[in-house]
Length: 262
Image 1 (cartoon, rainbow, N blue to C red):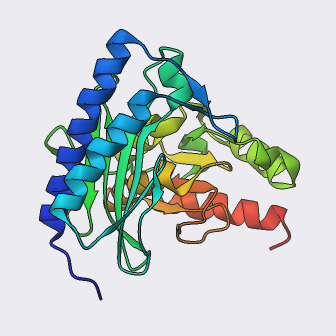
Image 2: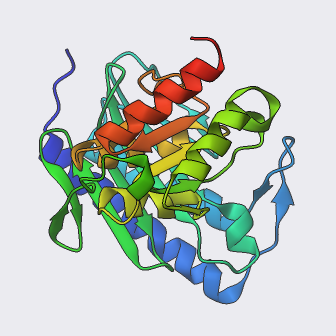
C-alpha cells in the first residue's frame, strides 16, 4: 500500500487551495474572457492559472503522487496516490458573477478517498477532512445531523437532468412529497450544509468525480454516507451522487433501487 503522511498532505492541499483562491479572487475582481471547450462548457484563464498554482504546490509536497486535474488532465497512474483537482468548479457561475463556485482538491490512495479540501473563496467557506481526522470548518469539527425520518428531512437536488429519464424520477418525487422541505442549493453549497448539519440529503445524477471527490471525503468524515445513486463507492468514473445522514441515505437508496426493480 502507498504510504503517505495525511497531515502533511492535508496541509499541502489547504495551501494549494489558498493559492488558487488568490488567483480566482484576482480574476473575480477584474473579469475574464470566456472560452468554450468541445463539450460546450466554459473555461477561463482563472481556471488554468489556479490549476497550475495547485499543481506546483501538490507536486512539491508529494512528488510521488499523480495529479488528475480538470484543465490539464491526468499526468500519471491511478493505482497508488492520485490527487483529484478541480481548480474552479462552477465556472458557469463564476463568469455570470454568482459566488457558487469553489476549488476542490482530494487525495485518493489506491482507489480510496483519504482527504479533501473544498474552498469557496467568494462565498467565504473552506471545509477540509482527512481519513480518521474528522471534518472541519472554521476551526470547528462538524457533523451531519441526526435526522432519521423523511418527514423531518431537508433535501437538496443539484444536476438531475439524467434522473428525469427513468423510473427514479417518480421515486425522487416521492422523496420530495414525504420530506419536510426541498431545496436546490447545488454545487459545493449543499454538501457543506450537509456536513455541518444544515441539510439531510443531497441527490445529483450528473456530476464528475472531480466535482465531488473532496466533498465525499468531507461528508464521510462528518459521519454521513456518500455513494453514487446505485449505492457504490465513488471512483474515477462515478457520475452521480447520493449523500446524506446514514438513515436517510439508506431510505433514499432503497427507494431508487425499488424504482428500478432492484
